[in-house]
Image (cartoon, rainbow, N blue to C red; front, top):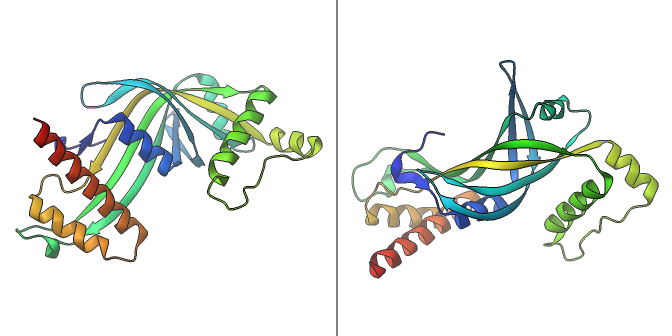
Length: 222
């Protein structure tokens, strides 16, 4: 991923929060020069990481499942690297919101995860994965749906799916939030986005506000 230094994000807690908040990722594989892409929800199992040279490195897993009818899963048996892209909130930025001269741009958060993939083939592990995925995304419902279906239907469903997990080898994140602009310019962007009815605009404003606050605290503690 192209990452200008001003926009590089290495805080593994913030990266993990971004993935969990926007878990619908893009799985990309390349076999004999041909790329295959599938859009899937992922679960992140995160271990302690250490900060590397411009990116976060460490142990962790992404867990998901794919339709058995989708031929992309057959690539997993090769044991080669895969890429998963997570797109966070993004918003158009008008230069009219700046105090100083500027040009139109786009603010966004994106995370690229690379790793090696292996199949989850035993029934108990696949069943546990489906339960976890369901409970995670049903948690916000007033009456959460429970993954408790009769054995025959369950067996039929799982026969149609292929579970897999990706052992994370590298994570790169770009959080482009006008860090290269003055504090006054960023404040103007936050004010404008906060007034927008668009959920992404408001999410970008919130993240920019949090980033400015953390930077001020860091300067105070220096």
